[in-house]
Length: 261
Image 1: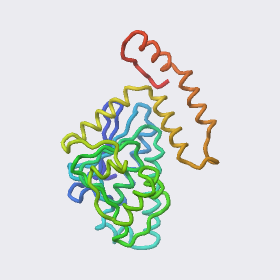
Image 2 (image 1 turned 120 degrees about the vertical axis):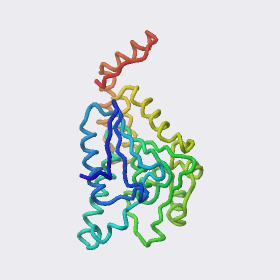
Image 3 (image 1 turned 90 degrees about the horizontal axis):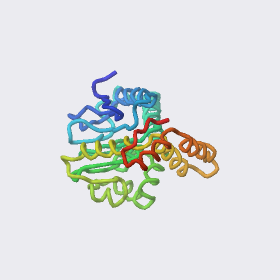
Image 4 (image 1 turned 45 degrees about the horizontal axis):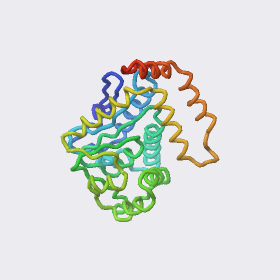
Protein backbone atom coordinates (compact mmCIF):
# COMPACT_ATOMS: atom_id res chain seq x y z
CA UNK A 1 0.00 0.00 0.00
CA UNK A 2 1.64 3.27 1.13
CA UNK A 3 3.68 4.45 4.10
CA UNK A 4 1.61 7.65 4.05
CA UNK A 5 -1.14 5.81 5.93
CA UNK A 6 -0.12 4.12 9.17
CA UNK A 7 -2.18 1.71 11.24
CA UNK A 8 -1.75 0.69 14.84
CA UNK A 9 -3.61 -1.33 17.44
CA UNK A 10 -3.08 -1.31 21.18
CA UNK A 11 -5.47 -3.61 22.98
CA UNK A 12 -9.02 -2.72 21.94
CA UNK A 13 -8.08 0.64 20.39
CA UNK A 14 -7.07 0.88 16.73
CA UNK A 15 -5.61 3.90 14.93
CA UNK A 16 -5.41 5.13 11.36
CA UNK A 17 -2.81 7.89 10.96
CA UNK A 18 -2.51 10.17 7.93
CA UNK A 19 1.24 10.39 7.50
CA UNK A 20 2.21 13.18 5.14
CA UNK A 21 3.13 15.96 7.61
CA UNK A 22 5.30 17.83 5.08
CA UNK A 23 2.02 18.57 3.22
CA UNK A 24 -0.12 18.98 6.34
CA UNK A 25 -1.41 15.46 5.72
CA UNK A 26 -3.02 16.30 2.39
CA UNK A 27 -4.51 13.12 0.95
CA UNK A 28 -3.82 11.42 -2.37
CA UNK A 29 -5.82 8.68 -4.06
CA UNK A 30 -3.44 5.95 -2.88
CA UNK A 31 -3.87 7.21 0.68
CA UNK A 32 -7.67 7.04 0.43
CA UNK A 33 -7.36 3.51 -0.93
CA UNK A 34 -5.12 2.55 2.00
CA UNK A 35 -7.63 4.00 4.46
CA UNK A 36 -10.38 1.98 2.79
CA UNK A 37 -8.37 -1.22 3.25
CA UNK A 38 -7.62 -0.38 6.90
CA UNK A 39 -11.27 0.41 7.62
CA UNK A 40 -12.31 -2.92 6.17
CA UNK A 41 -9.75 -4.80 8.25
CA UNK A 42 -10.53 -3.05 11.53
CA UNK A 43 -14.27 -3.29 10.95
CA UNK A 44 -14.02 -7.08 10.68
CA UNK A 45 -11.68 -7.45 13.67
CA UNK A 46 -13.73 -8.31 16.75
CA UNK A 47 -10.86 -7.34 19.03
CA UNK A 48 -11.23 -3.67 17.97
CA UNK A 49 -13.71 -1.66 20.01
CA UNK A 50 -12.66 1.91 19.19
CA UNK A 51 -11.03 3.57 16.16
CA UNK A 52 -9.07 6.84 16.37
CA UNK A 53 -8.22 8.79 13.21
CA UNK A 54 -5.38 11.31 13.43
CA UNK A 55 -2.69 13.12 11.47
CA UNK A 56 1.06 12.75 11.92
CA UNK A 57 3.35 15.62 12.88
CA UNK A 58 1.12 17.49 15.32
CA UNK A 59 0.44 20.35 12.87
CA UNK A 60 -2.57 19.06 10.97
CA UNK A 61 -5.33 16.46 11.03
CA UNK A 62 -6.03 16.44 7.28
CA UNK A 63 -5.75 19.52 5.07
CA UNK A 64 -7.77 18.26 2.13
CA UNK A 65 -6.67 16.83 -1.20
CA UNK A 66 -3.04 16.61 -2.30
CA UNK A 67 -3.17 19.14 -5.15
CA UNK A 68 0.24 18.05 -6.43
CA UNK A 69 -1.39 14.76 -7.45
CA UNK A 70 -4.19 16.33 -9.49
CA UNK A 71 -2.38 16.00 -12.83
CA UNK A 72 -1.87 12.28 -12.35
CA UNK A 73 -5.02 11.43 -10.37
CA UNK A 74 -7.71 13.91 -11.49
CA UNK A 75 -6.76 15.03 -14.98
CA UNK A 76 -9.65 13.41 -16.89
CA UNK A 77 -13.38 13.06 -16.36
CA UNK A 78 -12.95 9.34 -15.73
CA UNK A 79 -10.13 9.93 -13.25
CA UNK A 80 -12.17 12.53 -11.37
CA UNK A 81 -15.12 10.13 -11.20
CA UNK A 82 -12.86 7.37 -9.85
CA UNK A 83 -11.31 9.69 -7.26
CA UNK A 84 -14.71 10.97 -6.11
CA UNK A 85 -16.14 7.46 -5.88
CA UNK A 86 -13.18 6.36 -3.77
CA UNK A 87 -13.46 9.27 -1.32
CA UNK A 88 -17.22 8.75 -1.05
CA UNK A 89 -16.69 5.09 -0.18
CA UNK A 90 -14.21 6.04 2.54
CA UNK A 91 -16.45 8.73 4.04
CA UNK A 92 -19.38 6.32 4.01
CA UNK A 93 -17.26 3.59 5.60
CA UNK A 94 -16.13 5.86 8.42
CA UNK A 95 -19.67 7.07 9.05
CA UNK A 96 -21.07 3.52 8.98
CA UNK A 97 -18.20 1.97 10.96
CA UNK A 98 -19.97 -0.25 13.52
CA UNK A 99 -17.76 0.83 16.42
CA UNK A 100 -17.17 4.29 17.91
CA UNK A 101 -14.78 6.57 16.02
CA UNK A 102 -12.81 9.56 17.33
CA UNK A 103 -11.20 12.28 15.22
CA UNK A 104 -8.03 13.44 17.00
CA UNK A 105 -7.57 16.90 15.47
CA UNK A 106 -4.18 18.56 15.86
CA UNK A 107 -3.74 21.90 14.10
CA UNK A 108 -5.28 22.40 10.67
CA UNK A 109 -8.47 20.63 9.62
CA UNK A 110 -9.31 21.88 6.14
CA UNK A 111 -11.66 20.86 3.33
CA UNK A 112 -11.65 17.09 3.13
CA UNK A 113 -10.31 17.02 6.68
CA UNK A 114 -13.51 18.64 7.92
CA UNK A 115 -15.54 16.22 5.79
CA UNK A 116 -13.67 13.26 7.26
CA UNK A 117 -14.01 14.49 10.84
CA UNK A 118 -17.78 14.87 10.37
CA UNK A 119 -17.98 11.16 9.58
CA UNK A 120 -16.53 10.38 13.03
CA UNK A 121 -18.65 10.08 16.15
CA UNK A 122 -16.54 12.36 18.35
CA UNK A 123 -14.15 15.20 17.50
CA UNK A 124 -11.43 16.43 19.87
CA UNK A 125 -9.15 19.31 18.90
CA UNK A 126 -6.42 21.54 20.30
CA UNK A 127 -6.80 25.18 21.28
CA UNK A 128 -4.71 26.17 18.27
CA UNK A 129 -6.72 24.17 15.74
CA UNK A 130 -8.23 25.86 12.69
CA UNK A 131 -11.10 24.71 10.49
CA UNK A 132 -12.20 25.75 7.02
CA UNK A 133 -14.04 24.52 3.95
CA UNK A 134 -12.65 26.73 1.14
CA UNK A 135 -14.89 25.39 -1.64
CA UNK A 136 -16.29 28.84 -2.47
CA UNK A 137 -12.75 30.19 -2.94
CA UNK A 138 -12.02 27.45 -5.47
CA UNK A 139 -15.31 27.38 -7.36
CA UNK A 140 -16.05 23.83 -6.24
CA UNK A 141 -19.48 22.31 -5.92
CA UNK A 142 -20.16 20.32 -2.76
CA UNK A 143 -22.37 17.23 -2.94
CA UNK A 144 -25.44 16.56 -0.80
CA UNK A 145 -23.99 13.85 1.51
CA UNK A 146 -21.17 16.08 2.78
CA UNK A 147 -23.45 19.06 3.32
CA UNK A 148 -26.01 16.91 5.13
CA UNK A 149 -23.36 15.61 7.51
CA UNK A 150 -22.35 19.19 8.30
CA UNK A 151 -25.95 20.32 8.81
CA UNK A 152 -26.61 17.29 11.04
CA UNK A 153 -23.72 18.37 13.27
CA UNK A 154 -23.83 22.20 13.33
CA UNK A 155 -27.27 23.06 11.95
CA UNK A 156 -28.17 24.94 8.75
CA UNK A 157 -27.22 28.47 9.90
CA UNK A 158 -23.63 27.60 10.83
CA UNK A 159 -23.31 25.34 7.78
CA UNK A 160 -24.19 28.30 5.58
CA UNK A 161 -21.69 30.54 7.38
CA UNK A 162 -18.91 27.96 6.96
CA UNK A 163 -19.55 27.61 3.23
CA UNK A 164 -20.61 31.15 2.32
CA UNK A 165 -17.57 32.80 3.95
CA UNK A 166 -15.03 29.99 3.30
CA UNK A 167 -13.01 31.54 6.13
CA UNK A 168 -11.00 29.85 8.87
CA UNK A 169 -12.70 29.22 12.19
CA UNK A 170 -10.70 28.82 15.38
CA UNK A 171 -11.19 26.07 17.95
CA UNK A 172 -13.48 28.09 20.19
CA UNK A 173 -15.71 29.00 17.26
CA UNK A 174 -15.79 25.34 16.27
CA UNK A 175 -16.80 24.39 19.82
CA UNK A 176 -19.60 26.95 19.90
CA UNK A 177 -20.93 25.66 16.58
CA UNK A 178 -20.82 22.08 17.84
CA UNK A 179 -18.28 21.15 15.18
CA UNK A 180 -16.08 19.64 17.93
CA UNK A 181 -16.98 17.92 21.19
CA UNK A 182 -13.99 19.08 23.21
CA UNK A 183 -11.16 21.61 22.99
CA UNK A 184 -8.01 20.86 25.01
CA UNK A 185 -4.48 22.34 25.19
CA UNK A 186 -2.53 21.58 22.03
CA UNK A 187 -0.13 19.24 23.81
CA UNK A 188 -3.01 17.19 25.28
CA UNK A 189 -5.01 16.29 22.15
CA UNK A 190 -3.56 12.79 21.83
CA UNK A 191 -3.95 12.04 25.54
CA UNK A 192 -7.53 13.37 25.55
CA UNK A 193 -8.44 11.15 22.60
CA UNK A 194 -6.79 8.18 24.31
CA UNK A 195 -8.60 8.89 27.57
CA UNK A 196 -11.92 9.08 25.75
CA UNK A 197 -11.19 5.84 23.89
CA UNK A 198 -10.22 4.06 27.11
CA UNK A 199 -13.42 5.23 28.78
CA UNK A 200 -15.57 3.94 25.91
CA UNK A 201 -13.64 0.66 25.66
CA UNK A 202 -14.32 -0.06 29.33
CA UNK A 203 -18.08 -0.01 28.74
CA UNK A 204 -20.31 -2.76 27.35
CA UNK A 205 -19.57 -3.03 23.60
CA UNK A 206 -23.07 -4.18 22.67
CA UNK A 207 -24.63 -1.20 24.42
CA UNK A 208 -22.24 1.24 22.77
CA UNK A 209 -22.60 -0.25 19.31
CA UNK A 210 -26.40 -0.52 19.54
CA UNK A 211 -26.55 3.13 20.63
CA UNK A 212 -24.44 4.16 17.63
CA UNK A 213 -26.77 2.27 15.31
CA UNK A 214 -29.95 3.71 16.82
CA UNK A 215 -28.65 7.30 16.85
CA UNK A 216 -27.71 6.81 13.20
CA UNK A 217 -31.29 5.77 12.49
CA UNK A 218 -32.60 9.04 13.94
CA UNK A 219 -30.66 10.91 11.22
CA UNK A 220 -32.27 9.16 8.24
CA UNK A 221 -35.73 9.85 6.84
CA UNK A 222 -38.50 8.43 9.02
CA UNK A 223 -39.72 6.21 6.18
CA UNK A 224 -36.25 4.64 5.94
CA UNK A 225 -35.71 3.90 9.63
CA UNK A 226 -35.36 0.26 10.62
CA UNK A 227 -37.04 0.30 14.01
CA UNK A 228 -37.17 -3.48 14.13
CA UNK A 229 -33.38 -3.59 13.91
CA UNK A 230 -33.21 -0.99 16.71
CA UNK A 231 -35.48 -3.11 18.91
CA UNK A 232 -33.48 -6.24 18.13
CA UNK A 233 -30.24 -4.58 19.23
CA UNK A 234 -31.80 -3.44 22.49
CA UNK A 235 -33.15 -6.94 23.16
CA UNK A 236 -29.74 -8.44 22.40
CA UNK A 237 -28.23 -6.22 25.10
CA UNK A 238 -30.73 -7.44 27.70
CA UNK A 239 -30.14 -11.06 26.64
CA UNK A 240 -26.35 -10.75 26.81
CA UNK A 241 -23.81 -12.07 29.29
CA UNK A 242 -22.59 -8.49 29.65
CA UNK A 243 -25.96 -7.44 31.10
CA UNK A 244 -25.56 -10.16 33.74
CA UNK A 245 -21.96 -9.07 34.36
CA UNK A 246 -22.95 -5.42 34.64
CA UNK A 247 -25.58 -6.15 37.31
CA UNK A 248 -23.25 -8.41 39.28
CA UNK A 249 -20.39 -5.91 39.15
CA UNK A 250 -22.68 -3.15 40.40
CA UNK A 251 -23.89 -5.25 43.33
CA UNK A 252 -20.37 -6.43 44.13
CA UNK A 253 -18.99 -2.90 43.86
CA UNK A 254 -16.31 -3.83 41.33
CA UNK A 255 -15.32 -2.91 37.80
CA UNK A 256 -17.22 -5.00 35.23
CA UNK A 257 -15.40 -7.20 32.73
CA UNK A 258 -17.39 -6.90 29.52
CA UNK A 259 -16.74 -9.33 26.67
CA UNK A 260 -19.18 -8.11 24.02
CA UNK A 261 -21.51 -11.08 24.19
